[in-house]
Amino acid sequence: MAHTTSKSTFNNPANPGLQTAKDAAGAMKETAGGMADTARGAAAAVAEKASDAASYLGKKAEDATSAVGSGMKSLAGTIRENMPHEGVLGSAGGAVANTLESGGRYLQEEGLSGMGEDVTDLIRRNPIPAVLIGIGVGFLLARATRS
Image (cartoon, rainbow, N blue to C red; front, side, top):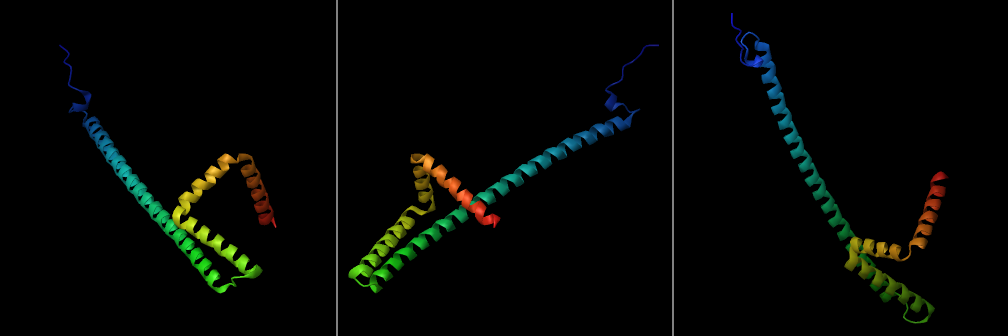
């Protein structure tokens, strides 16, 4: 008697469980692929929302910095109006008003990003004093929090 070869084992009508397993595996692959796509989409949406939130907070921080600068300039004007114009108090008041006004102008024009760039440039030009100041500030913070 001649031996006939059957088709694939998965299509064997005598063993329908193998076909069912193959179908289940295919369905699982499809579901996993769909879940991965959904996860990627959700991650992208979360990243976009986080970026939007960070942008919003950055804008609010810049606005607050500008408002502080405006307040400093206003305070400088108030000091100039109410301080004596002559004598020691007059010159001290004028110096304070000038400093407040220039600081306020700087905050309004540069904002937080400009301040960050200036601090970075200062540290690059003076690395050793910056490290020493950092160590000193760290030491003081450690002493203050330990007490």
